[in-house]
Image (cartoon, rainbow, N blue to C red):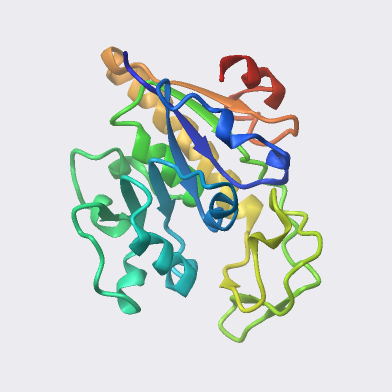
Length: 236
């Protein structure tokens, strides 16, 4: 049986989602960002982990999670090598390398975030894709963050209620990250991704890709067929 792929962002719409009920015989899982802080709590991990943010990939907890080897593959930014050079290179792939590989779907991309990078990484392997937690409704500057001189942001106090993510301590005190730029980066990358999938389906009909977004928010519905999140529960 050809497995389908569930690709998880980390938007607030996923709050309360029961990850452990997903049938792993039917679905492979791609997870992103700092969500391993939640996965550790429920002892559940994706098959593929994607984090291509050059700033966040330097976070010691991200590096430690990759070194724990709980996933089959990792797609990361090469910026991680500036902090940690001892990685399992049989399982770790770097976005910067994939962008230069002519047979990889990343050759079509000009804009990306970790969510769209996760989808692009799946295009050469899966024909049926399911998206979750791709809310793209970021509060750009939450009260618990401060802006640094280089334009990055740092969390000064772990939020009691983080409006951007499905669990409140997704970001913790000391985390440094980029301004989300939800409209100019995230939404733009989803728009571009819709064109990439459309192109693949026209040029390579033998590898027709079906992509569905599950979200009760408006989310990326402008670019992808979107169904309420609870609809997917019947498919688990």
